Length: 323
Image 1 (cartoon, one colour):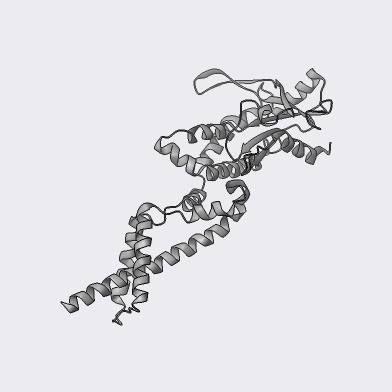
Image 2 (cartoon, one colour):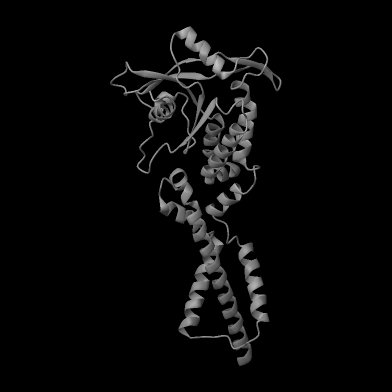
């Protein structure tokens, strides 16, 4: 009976030891991933390192129970100064493999940070990349370049607007906004109070597409007051809009369907993937690359202060024209 008790005690200690070793390894890897996430600290985590640590050290309920039991057991064995009484490594290897499979089964590696990295490593088949591909081929390639038929390209539409209205648009490209929250209002003036207002739309592109006769595509011209709402005689025109798939993502994230909840949990990663893929598509297309500029920005800080979109657009225009 004493031998059985000793064997059971040794087995339990061996299981505790191997789980503890693997937990140390798992936590070390997660901390290393935290360091790799620092490049996204501002956009994804509002420059809050605690948010990154939370995302890294997230464990499900089963994993927490195992961690607590393992820690208590390890503390008990240390107090008792208990050691294995065998030199045979085979039981240790068997226990190590068993514990690795057990930890995998309870989802020990499930955390927001690991999900984010999985999305980044999917090689263009993740949701963000899919959004970018659809947006590029289903919209931007329709409104930006000259297609060779009767439809005008973006530059020709801007020049037509300038001639018609007697004004100048200094940067003849479409600025596309990608806010970190994914929320884009129907009118951009609501996120730039007193700083900008919509003026008119450029000439429409009308196409029969996917069974829809005469589908309309158009872009909005905004007027930005360069010195703010108090000095409105100084202004500049710009063609700008939010990325519509991003607004759709925002609406998805507000629903409680199980798939929608998963999207909301990794919203930042989806946005980054969307931005990077769309930028790559634009860079690789000589007909579009000079007609569109993406603006990926943090639209609110930890205190809830909203970003003035007009100021961001002004800075981009000034970078190109020195106005």
